[in-house]
Amino acid sequence: MNERATESASSLQRLFEVEIVDFNVEGAGVGRWDGRVVFVPGGVIGDRLEVRVVAERRRWLEALPVKLIEPSAHRRPALCAQQGRCGGCPLMIVDPATALAWKVRHLSRQLEKLAEVVLPIEPVLPSPLAVEYRSRVRLALTRRGGRWRAGYRPRGRGRGVVTVDRCHLLAPGGWEVVERLLAALDGASLASGQAPSHLEVRASLAAGRWLALWHGGRAAGGELRRLSRRVLEMGAPLAGVALVGRSGRRPVWVEGRREVIERIGEIAFPLGFQGFAQVNPAAAGALYRLAGRALRDPEGKAPDSLLDLYCGAGLLALHGAGPSTRVVGVEADPAGLRPAAAAARVRGLDDARFVAGDAEAITTRLADAGERFEALAINPPRAGMGASIPRLARTLGVERVVMVSCHPATAARDVARLEAAGFRAVAVGAVDMFPQTPHLEVVIRLESEGGR
Ligand SMILES: C[S@@+](CC[C@H](N)C(=O)[O-])C[C@H]1O[C@@H](n2cnc3c(N)ncnc32)[C@H](O)[C@@H]1O
Image (cartoon, helix red, strand yellow):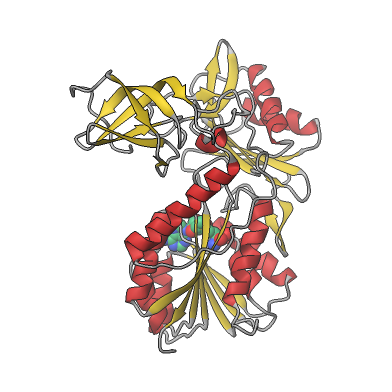
């Protein structure tokens, strides 16, 4: 459904009945009609629906429900009035056990299809919270009826903003911060073009403190800064506000706190306005503990040396390392490095360094310099790891790899590449880090075949 659909084909606007038998990666229902796959946003496995075609390709149709002829036994009411409009929680209308079973099935299918790996998936670790779990969200801003509103831009559905009255995924306190800042914007006199395009809020849930980041406002100082200061003076839970310009780089200005101390799993670290942070800290704690155990040897001994690629705040490495482990972390966004170094110090790791740069380029340099690592932790962005990393991991003498990913398809492709380079997948675990959505966080352990 990512491709742009044509509007000229003959099935457009047609009505027909379809039974939903699966979900796609975006959480839309999947059925078949007239030899073609039909994607039905809002369809639940087991539903019988009347649908109307809204987009068409040679091999697939996209159709919207017109009538629920026979609802699935797995269907449940959405607890959010915007569900189905904002694009954020397609599985909120599915009972949690069915949703999770589908996620596991999808992961198994991807591993089998793309990597020819058939392994049992360990019982999925649940998210402690099914809603109100997110500590971070980025909202698009728009002015409607003379008031500022926040919302989402659903993928592939034009340029509009679907405004939301409250996002039920955001942790307590977050929406109050958003509302205070929007109310302050309402009372301000920002010239057109000076208003920010987005508002991001992120929290230390451990401390119950939030940071707010305006994006893209041209008003570098002046009114936006003054109104932010006034909201800060209202006190908790807001601790700091900043503005980043269109480049998205360092903040142009900061009011209040630059950082709040967050704790995820075993690690306390300073969380700033920028740099990667997992969106579900409670589930991320379980993820890092699982990955940390997998980085140790079968006797539970921490590796002598550990390379953490795409390391963010270094939390994978810091959970896998022991006091004498030599750690190198590599992260493209320099904003991640300060929290990583600070957390390593608190953890008492004397031999940890975190390097800013491209993971592939720096791994190549490490390999050229003859460095060796016992274990590799790797959690790349959704596009997956650099293509040369599996081969470089062999050159570095890596004995075990723990790969974490929120994207089963690219994870499976990367497993295939690691296997081709001489590693073998031995265990697959997962954490249900994103309830109400089709995403699943995967932890795959691979071992080097034939030793170093
Ligand atoms: C999914 S996050 C994982 C962060 C961390 N490993 C964790 O598990 O918490 C992926 C990270 O990769 C970083 N990144 C993206 N492209 C990169 C590249 N080419 N080289 C190094 N880091 C990169 C991003 O900035 C982001 O922090």
